[in-house]
Length: 552
Image 1 (tube, rainbow, N blue to C red):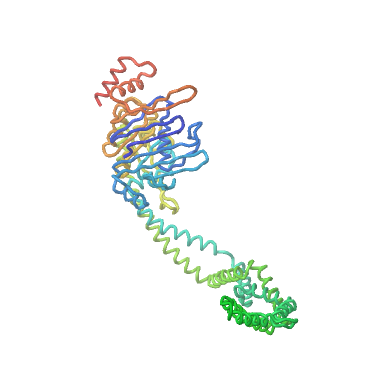
Image 2: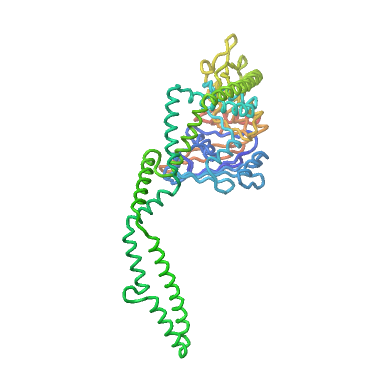
């Protein structure tokens, strides 16, 4: 459950710490005090999309942390699988928002990403706000309620494996359904391209080798001159002989070593150099012998390079790209040549897979129809308790073309008055009826839901009097098995709380500050009296508030 929420520099909240308990927790306060900021902060720390606009004016960043205690075994295993440590079944999520757009997220003080926060957050908290009541107005969302109630996720996943493969085959058949003349044209073109590339017998690195050889042939006379000059310097063709001079110097040093011992080492080094120079001279001679200018070879290279250049203009910027193009063209050509056989096999495979997919979709329909009846009955019972005694709920399931959820178009229909035929929610439900219907659905779904914390943001919209009392009792009932946090304006709901937090706005100087206080017994009486009495709180209002609190 959510034990502590710490908020810093979010909107009008400079800094506050909110403690929650088991059971029913309520948040009350005057309109504009900042109740919605609490929900925004919880959304932020559980990885939902958040704007930097919520950062308090004058601050560079905002920070939220949420401490969860007694987390379930499933949550603990998920956190461990994601690579985070869990001590004492406690989990701390935190997120810092900056004006520069950066997000710093942590799980148990270890860095993480926003998406990982969300992945864990959706397992910890389920938030029901006014926008979810509006979702009831959209029939497209209704199928999710039935599927969640019937716990069909694994069945839908299995169906989707077949459906996705069916879509691929359908796409293949459509893409290859062109006219015969176009296919023959492509075969001729690809055959020419493949033959042209194959006949060229290209090898990777060939162009660079040819360019180097061409460069050498074009400059062979210069190279010969340089080699001859180097040979002359070493071998003495030009009035001196470097090899003999080094050898003579070494001999004289040997003689000197008879009287100067250190000269022997220098002599040995010169002797080694003499041998090396002789080897180098021989190698230069070999290079001269190998060097030849062959005009016909240069012409061959020019022709080959021109051929490569033309292929590059057509098929790629390098030999590697040309060969890659050839491989792809070869595969496409093979596919076109085997078109009739491949299409026949694809059609046969499509028909078989269609039957399998349709059978899985029909199984989903059967499961939904069965679940729909039970769902309708359960939601009706909950709504009757919530002061709608004549309500009738029907789940309409009509057939549609195959799609990612099967072949069903699902819509929840409602009749709030005797004698009226159930109709779409969007046509007849009032705001108060929507709120109660959503609470009823949430209550029914919560029985199969493993999430420990449910948050209801102004679920009492459009409800008052006896109905709001029933809503409070239902929230109290749900809170027996999980933690419930509720933002409310109704005294009938607030009086049932196990833990009551007051959100209060203050103005100091020219700045607005919001703080959150956990109320004691007397504080609760004052707040319940304020909700009932408005601006002026009388002793009678306080007595009524105390009586209501004691009765609960």
